[in-house]
Figure 1 (cartoon, one colour):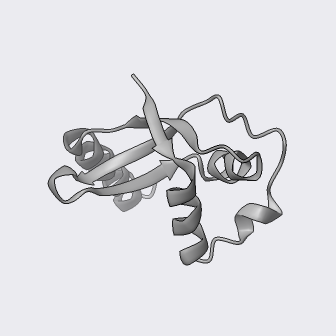
Figure 2 (cartoon, one colour; figure 1 turned 180 degrees about the vertical axis):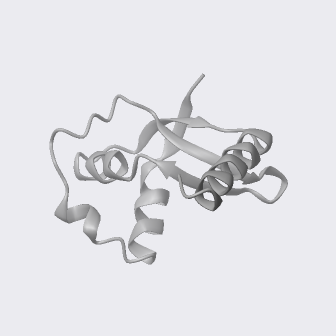
Figure 3 (cartoon, one colour; figure 1 turned 90 degrees about the vertical axis):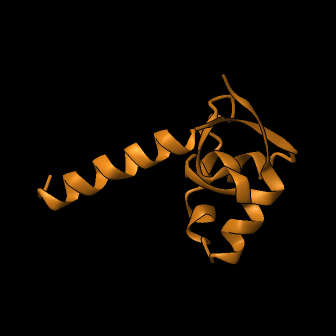
Length: 93
């Protein structure tokens, strides 16, 4: 189940990380009705990472939206995804 996430927070984070390439790819075709995906790195410290949907965040910001829907992965799901990704990279996949 998805829940809302703050567009301005993630847009500010992207700006802080100098992700200006997002504006280059801005397109009205980014479908803001599709939830972004946020990994829970450490729930107790409130440490999250947006892993899919940067263009939707950028589009939602351009449209003046305050929130966009997001799927939040649990810490266990996040660890498993990064473990699988690391194994694939190590194998040259």
